[in-house]
Amino acid sequence: TGSYAAAGLATAANSAATAFVSPVLGRIADRGRAVAVLAICGVGEAALLVAMVLALQADAPVWLVIVIAGLAGGLSPPIGAVTRVVLPRLAPDPASVQTAYALDAIAVELTYVAGPAVVGIITALAGAYVATVVAAVITALGALALATAPAVRATYRAVSRVVTHATPRRRSPLRTRGMLVVLSVAFVQAAAYGIMEVAIPAHAEHLGHASAAGILVALWSVGSIVGGLWYSGLTPRTPPYRQYGILMLLNVAGFA
Image (cartoon, rainbow, N blue to C red; front, side):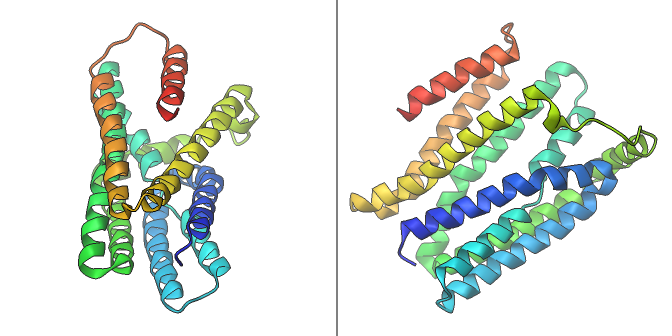
């Protein structure tokens, strides 16, 4: 559309829908239906991304594009959540679990390094619409690959048996004060990162270097990868909550 305001609203709608729907998808997955959730959401989100491309090509109203972006976010497959449930069952000891989680975080950051580069190349060769369709295909293939992984099937069969024999009435995590604090902090942090993801390309274009936006986002993620690799090799004595507070303050300093 040529409007970064529209892009920001579409991004916000996508992220907000993901935030609201993810707990529901996670609960369904935890009841032993992770394979179905991954498969349906992976294919569904991919279809909606293609629909968004078709809407843009047809010069559809901006509000319709934003709605489609939101729906796509609502069907975002819970790849991270499922992976983090499976990892402890694959690790041989507690120290390995921490390293596995750190490597998982690094893998996520790698998408922010490789992603902008791949999008830039495809956009230069075939256009942004093609890049979006490629992203849709990768989403579907990734979700289906994880859904068919033996470790996922075995883990959630075991989870399903536990849930089946569990007490039907359980207190919701959302009623726990600590969980509400964590979610509030995560919400604000996610908003900050969402703003940066739109502000960086907008500022790059304002300076007359729109093509550099992907490089800037990639460099931002390179820092996260270096920090993740460093952290994964540590065995800190500081309690996790204190580590989190220190890292958040450093993150604020980095933004400033």
